[in-house]
Image (cartoon, rainbow, N blue to C red):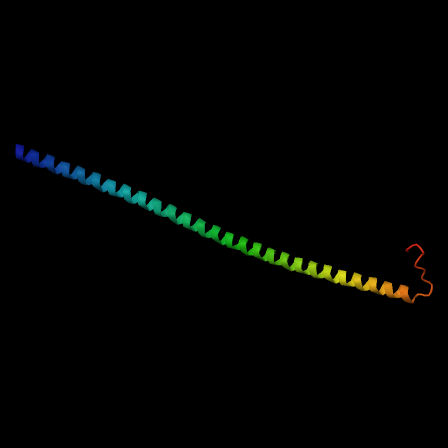
Length: 110
């Protein structure tokens, strides 16, 4: 074999080795990128699930708060009604004492 042919074959082998290394590097890079894309997709799916769960929890909390406000208003209204009824009962009791011929203001209270 001639030296020139040997040099050409060595150069050709070097080019093939470099090409194989480059192709392997690209494939490895593409594999890493695809793996990261899959991971990113999984994170997005998990984020969507958690976002929906958070929205549901917020809606339930708002509903519970609204129910609590309604209950508070109802309790306040009931307390006001009880105060009015107590005042009316006291007024009627006073009138009853005024018209009761048997009422003795000096007697111990019932």
